[in-house]
Length: 104
Image (cartoon, rainbow, N blue to C red; front, top):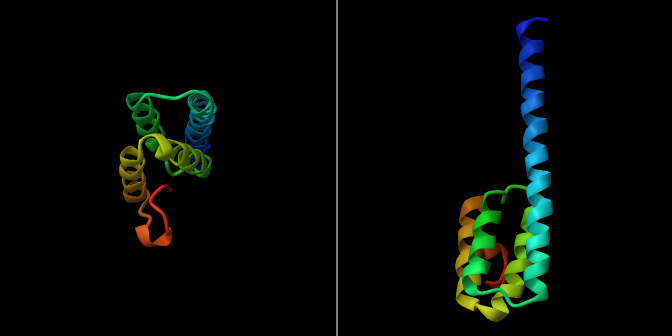
């Protein structure tokens, strides 16, 4: 096995492991969001969920879940939702002018 093949094999294992982590995290956060929406999360709980999801913001599934949760949270804690939308947009490099509203 030459260096390129070895590097490819090592890299493919890392990519597979990263994908598994993202899949697991998405499953966990989907459940957290679902449970939060069924009840009324405290502001601290909402912030905790949003903080955690920011770690995965480049995954399209998380972007959808994040926006869904922000829309829900906006009704309860508008300042929190607006702040986290800004953080999210800054993190992914999205221009605020791409959206008409502040709640994702």
